Image (tube, rainbow, N blue to C red; front, top):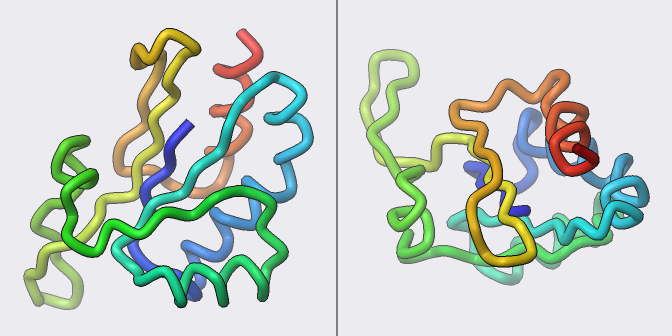
Length: 121
């Protein structure tokens, strides 16, 4: 399972990362591998992992290559300003490497529960 998020240490990204952390044992029991991806550099990931005791791998996609492959590096708008960034998304990949489910433009509330339900089905 890959989840793409915009930026370490921001409130919504922290909430999402901690939600995956809090449900990690259930995901792990279902044989799910959790990997988070953002454009932050590796040192930022290390601080984020340490600060929030995240038990899973975070990958750095500073050049947006993986984000582009999954179509989550897109034009965004905030406060009338346009910029490129990651659209919060999660991809469930089965043991054969095939896409089993995807969630795009994720709202954090209830998201991990939806992912867990898909993993368990």
